[in-house]
Length: 119
Image (cartoon, rainbow, N blue to C red; front, side, top):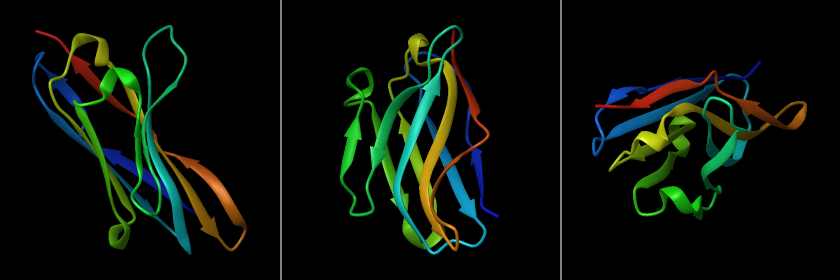
């Protein structure tokens, strides 16, 4: 059984910063792509950033230059550094990983962490 546990969300003022973490545990052979998604009230879940096993990154246009995704393969963990936060960044943030186990490759989601940007 694989679990993804997120941490790091909270309330921050506009212009502030947060760092989200997501750690995977369980019977893991390897992890391919990792990513962060977000879902604001009344909107669809959208990709924020992703990172391949080789370290190549991809960002949604609204967060380019402000957010940074990184990973620590030894810890099975993905991070998202959020800088220069804006009220429109308010959402529940979910991590996602493509994980190889004894059952093959499967997609896993974290439980979500709330990020609220407000003065």
